[in-house]
Length: 464
Length: 53
Image 1: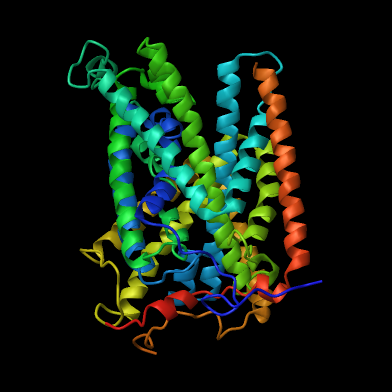
Image 2: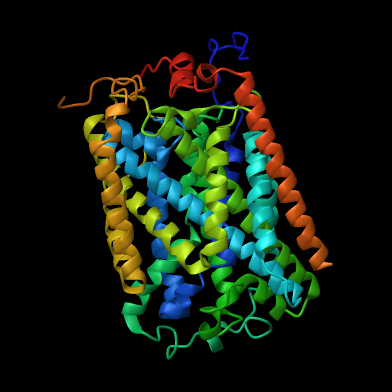
């Protein structure tokens, strides 16, 4: 037997709930990213030395500041679940939108997988028990967080706010515990980073380091996925995203300074736990345990945000019939895209059990950089089709088109860096997106209701 | 302790996965497909904001 809902505020439709504020947007963005300070960024030191890791910290910071500014402007205008997918659909076209949605789902699902593997490996490393494997911890991470996401977005992001804040505060505590204003006591930057070893592979090492420099900030653009669930998207999204970016720039700088001052670049570049190791090197059991817990919390927060974002991108594809509409179901009680959450759950579990951390990270980074490249083109088209004054914007980013040009150039450099390290994966991924685009164009698009997919009440674009 | 924790993780995962499957089945058999897939992009935006500049 089937029943219908009582008429609600907006007719008898079941939609996502608008319950989030700027703090939740911050928690979503920073929550996804902060794990990159606990592991990932430090592999840049292996590629080019400690100074290269610092250079990419700032240069990639410029890339992501451009991402945050561009994203804030467009998403404060296109406030819909799916984030960059909805932007691409309205500004570029359906084929681009389909690809962008897949970039999003891949980037976040693979990042979720990486987070779960990291969490499992961290617990196994701490336990030191023979025969203990990471599988049970991976399963619990993915299933518990999927359950949390299934039960509602407000609690999901409240939890993310708390655990992200604890992980962030742990970095601040570590920073002030090692007397950062004094060299020689705990920190030995002048001994560990010298003119002789600062750039051991020269400037090509700096270029190669871009691949892992992405980890300082990967995922901050995920804030836009909350667009349909924030109470005031035009205000909350730019505010939460920019505040998140500022928070991360500070965390990245503190993390590099402490780690590069305590570990030689040869070790820093290969360890999976730079901040936890820094905690151990202080000799304080309290700091060691704090950084261990913070590593776990950062991984949890990131996986949590990734489940939220990947499900919304997948849900949006279903809602526009780019995929079967079955995926666009909203839970009538919890108001979440429950089928998309459940569909992606076994996929994440399968990858987490069979893939290794490096492969999962590389696929996530590749999809992310493809998305950033799109964003640089997207903002140029957006400003051209709807110039300032033609539609209402919640935020207008300054210095246009300089951020778009900077973003595009840095994406090209990052692609080259990825090609140096993971050329075959890069080619395989581009081939995959090409083939899936053919499938969409020649087969799937005929199911799409073309007029229904463009929902923003905008005037006709200039030139049309 | 870690081994016990590992078994507890398996247990929690199985219980929550089963609960989600049960709830999914219950929702899908209680509500019509039209209601469940009735969400529309931009609907609230269009209602709450008249888009005047």
